[in-house]
Image 1 (cartoon, rainbow, N blue to C red):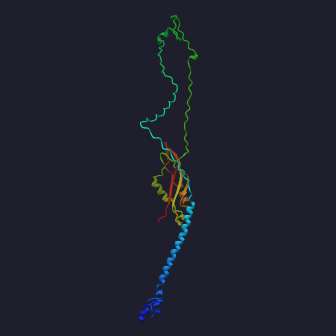
Image 2 (cartoon, rainbow, N blue to C red; image 1 turned 90 degrees about the vertical axis):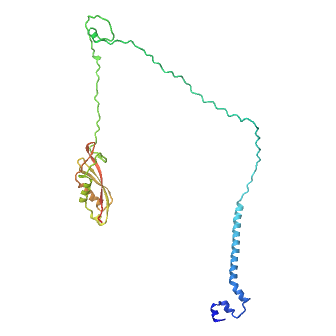
Image 3 (tube, helix red, strand yellow; image 1 turned 60 degrees about the vertical axis):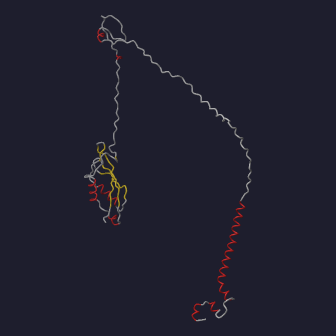
Length: 279
C-alpha cells in the first residue's frame, strides 16, 4: 500500500492489505455495522408490537366485560281505527253556567219635598214703642204701660280664654356646621394663609427627618369672633407638626363671626395646615 493511501485507509483496509477483499471475512466485517443497526431496529419494533398488543388486549377485555345485555321487549301496537269520511266533529264541551249574582235592590234617590213654613213678618221697631216684646204676637190694651223685663239669664256671657302661644327658644350656645354666612378671617382667606405662613415655624424634628404633609385642625368661631375648642383632627406629618399647628391656630386674631337668621352664632370650622420643605 502506498504511503498516501495509508492516511486515507481505515483499520479494516490495513488488516486486509494484500489479501482478497471480494468475499469472505472482509465483506462480512464491512457490512457488520449496518446489519447490527437493522437487527436492533427490527427487535425494538417487534418488542413494541408485543407490548402494545398486551396493553390493548387488557383494555378491550375490560370494556367487553363491562357491557351488560339488556333485554328489550317489543310490543305490537294496534293500528288506530280508520276515520269515517264525512263524519261530523265531536260537539264542544258544554259551557259552565255563570256564577250566581248577588241579590240587588233598586236604588231610588230620595226626593226632598220643599215644605214652605208659615212666614212671620219681621216686627217693626215702631211697634215696640206701644207693645211689649214676647215670644208670640198677642193683641192687648194699647193704652197699657210698656214693660220690658230683662232677665239676668237672658244675656249669655262668653268667657274668652287667653291662648298660650309656645315660643320656640333657640339654643344660643348651639354650634353650627353650616350657616347662611360663614365666619371669615380678617381680610379673607388669602390673608389667613399669609398670616399662618408668617407665624408657623417648621418643627426641627420634622425638618431633620424630612417629614411633610397636612395637619387637619378643627376649632369653633364664637359669636364675638374669638377662637375656642381648638383640636387636632388628623396629624399626617408627625415630629411636632400637630403641636405647632395647634399653637398657631390658638394665636389667631378674632374672626368675623358667622351669621344665621340675622344673628351671630357659633360655627365649627375645619382648617388644613400644610407643612412642606423647600427643595
